[in-house]
Each structure stands twice: as structure tokens, then as C-alpha cells.
Image 1 (cartoon, rainbow, N blue to C red):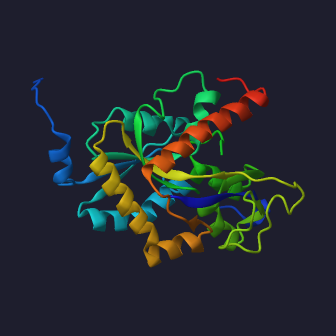
Image 2 (image 1 turned 180 degrees about the vertical axis):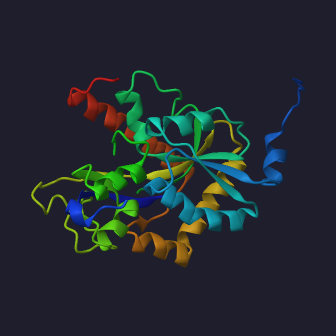
Image 3 (image 1 turned 135 degrees about the vertical axis):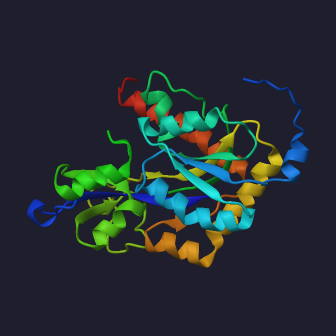
Length: 279
């Protein structure tokens, strides 16, 4: 799935008015037979961030419809921390049977260049399913970070619009701009960073779904089709748009895989040119 999501640069409003705050058996699995009966039990969807952030919000918007189309419960499992690495590693080690998925986040493509050791290979260890085009901060996720912004502990941040726009609309934070090339349809009064004084500025992130590498193609295709269908549901689409996101389903799992490759190369170049050393 491909959902364009923007970052919003916000600051906390004045502090005095904004306080809130044992037995091994051997068997042979035939992929075609496995896919034919899929799914026959609940599907675990790992979200590599805490509740309340943009990735968690987007996942929970889609999960009910995906569950309806699959005919099985989608069990959300929040595993935040290490810029998404904890949840991604857990998913990478899962059986490639379509019953464990992970909500991929853009930071997974920059982690290899920022960190000396990453416990997975994003291209080798995962089968891209679908993408939502939707910051690195020293928090487990955007939810805890925004709490500190609202409370006045952090003066300014760049955060996903899905988790930020409700705070902007309620007056608890002030938006300086969106980082996309054009204004967000759900927040047309917020200027772009380019309009605010940095010509040519554009930076967007994305959200998507991955399955462990080796997951049968039939299952990947089924999941992709159902996620796209969920994004096109009028009620789901309206929720995204109202929160500032613009759902535009991707064409195929291969399209998502191509974006992952491009993002890994792009961020490696940006990080190298900026002189940032892996830690």
C-alpha cells in the first residue's frame, strides 16, 4: 500500500497552558497447499513502535478492514525501540507462513547506515507486501516524543502528521510547516517548509507491510490485494485524509521492493555526505 504521509514540524505552545500530560519433528510444507488454506487462524501484525505514533495509528486504521477481508483476526503486537529494529528482528526470525507480518517504517532503510550493527537485512530477510507512503528521535516512538513536546519538555520536533494533526487542531501544539512539496489536504492552512523559507525542501516518509522472506507468493499477493482494498474503502480513506494523510495504493509488492532498495541507497548517501558516523 502506498500512502503519502507527511512530517509536520511543531512546537509546544506555552508551557503554562499546555501541561498534559523438546521435541523436534520434521515435516515438508508445500507452499501451494499452505497458501490455498490461508488464513485459517489469526494473523500477528508487529508494529515496531509504541502505541500512539503514526505507524501504530495507520496500522490500526487498516487492521479492521484487513481482518474483515481475510476472515481472521489481526492481532496488533507493539514492539517499539531501537528505531524499529526490535520489532523488525522479531519478524525476520518468524516462520515465512503469512501469520507474522511487520509494519515497516522508513527508518528501517536508514538504520544500516546509522548503526554499526543491524540484526536483519531489509532486502534479504523480508518479502515486501504493500506500502503506505506516509524521524529519527531518541524516543521509542512518536507517541512519547509528542507527550514531551506538549508538556514543554521538548521545544520543537518533526513528527508524522497522523499523530500530530489532532494536537495541532486542538491548539496544544503549533505547526510551522509540512515537509512535503505541497500542502496536506487534511491541513491546507499549514504551509510547506519550502513556502516557509527553505526553497526546494521535500522529505516524506512511508509505512508498509513486510512478511518474512520465503513467504509464498500467493499469500503475499493476497495480502497486497486486501490491503489495497482496505485503503480504498471510503471510511478508511476518509480517516486517513482527515488526519492529513493521502492514501494512494502502490501497484505491486515489487514496487514496494524497488522503493526499499532506492531508500536504502538514498539514505546511505545522505548520511555519508553529512559525515554522520554509525554508532
